[in-house]
Amino acid sequence: MSNGEADVAHIEKRVSKNDVVRYRALVRLQGHPPQSATFDRKTDAKKWGQQTEAAIREGRHFKSVAAKRHTGAELIDRYIQEILPRKPKSFDPQFKQLMWWRAQLAHLSLADITPHVIAGCRTKLGAEPIRGGVRSPSTVNRYMAALSHVFTVAVMEWGWLEDNPMRRIAKLKEPKGRVRFLSDDERKRLLDACRTSRSPLLYPAVVVALSTGMRKNEVLGLRWSDVDLERRVVVLEETKNDERRAIPLAGLALQVIRKLFEERGPDCPFVFPGKGGTSPVDLRTPWETALRRAGIEDFRFHDLRHSAASYLAMNGASLAEIADVLGHKTLQMVKRYAHLSEQHTAGVVASMNEKIFGAQQ
Image (tube, rainbow, N blue to C red; front, top):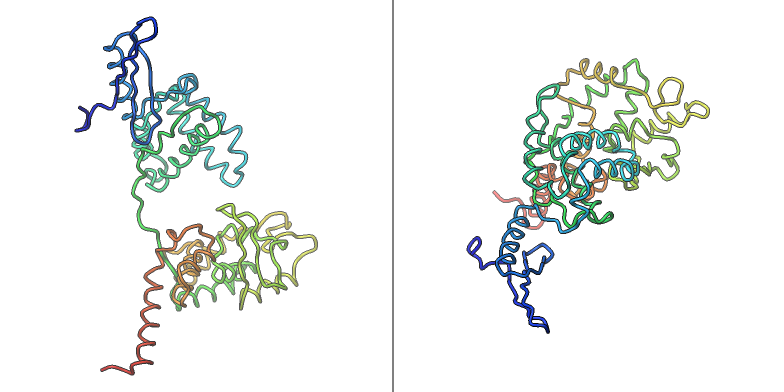
């Protein structure tokens, strides 16, 4: 018996035409391909079945010979050489993550890289001292995701493994997403400080970020080839999610973009150019100065994106609409704004009830 269930290993007696008796052991476990082997002795078949079942349950069994022949170092090296160059936007951070995993797993065969081994590495990863403390759960999860894709490619494309051991590794629980948005008064103070900044590009950049919900690198890296003033839209061909995204331009954001277009330098590709016009502007110092002058604390440039999403929610946009504007593939990332949408919905329902039933005392 195993975990209250009948033995998974089934032993079948086989007799050949020459009266030679052999025993075939068959192991079936839900979620795994069946494994079988044939032996001269029944005791050997039973032993193999028990060992194979235990190995599968512990994530140690890979029938593929390749899993025993290839090492963790070979796996990660091949991925870095063949797959990672296809992901230019995430190349640098994932290279760093995978090199950490390589240091832990290089000497092991793929057959020996079990969920238990990976879980131990995960614990080490989260406790390892780094500048400023230790890695956050979200950072650990990003390291795990990088390694998981390596194993997925090894299974699906290279045939080095039959299963991804990461499927049995739980992600760390992450804190709820931060939602820090500007109040009406904070927004006015910040825009006033940006308007009088020594950098003429700070104010329009902040206006565009607040109006569109674009990420910092999307705003500052914006090129004139991405902007269609006739259609009043910005089209981002390359985004964090590797999907094309169209973002409407309206109101003040449209005005400041038009003004920048009129004042643009010859042959300058960037909407917010740095010195020389060959790279985007660096607004770090002007931004920090504006925050101090406006008396605003605990606020990052990325929080302009949260502010835009919060304003959308408070003005009646659905979570699906907010996700579409921000470029999220699922609603999970925008659920943090749900309470703001619910407040608006409650107001709409109250207004509707008052109109059809009259004011109730």
